[in-house]
Image (tube, rainbow, N blue to C red):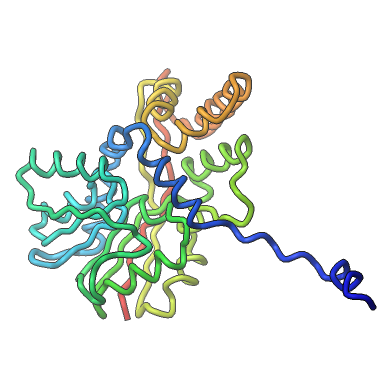
Length: 282
């Protein structure tokens, strides 16, 4: 058989995504809009996570992909020594403003979740609420969470599930703007199977509890307007589409809200499932 014939007979390897380019695009996405407007409504998730972790006063806590600081502030309210990190400086600025307003002591440091600038075993607890799940390289980010957590310490996360409202929002966006080939869905972080795969070898225990955050807005249209304006992924999605395609995406999103909405009036009351994960580091 000739070399050329052999080449034809061999199956083509699946294209590997350019994770560096993906990270650059993601950073631009989360730098757009003003996530803090949406993020501040999620504060209760950070409080619940700190309770589930049973953080104690004086413990060293790292918040990875902290956004505007929900988990950071929750830990600081419990007298922990908190470091909040994110690769979007503007979001850390928002978190800094909140900490100052509440007279809470938090250290802020710009950092990439896939290359944390801390020594191994530096923290008693490492947390992330709807943050690290959006990294480009899932395995590298997971390895970093493990590396900086001390043996016997805890890693706590809140990650949207594929089946929940936000997981379905991303699925809907993907129908209109397909992601690059080979890129793993952020919602995989909201599945027990993927958590076991990434953390099982480094854990003495893993607890995974489905919970719900309830989005409460004046109406479905109000939610859409807020998210189109301030939530980077949706803002960028609409900006990438022509007017007719924007209208189609908007129609699909409103229909999705209607499927989840449990409000009995014109308002929006939509429970969104997330997986709360508490990992005890081996």
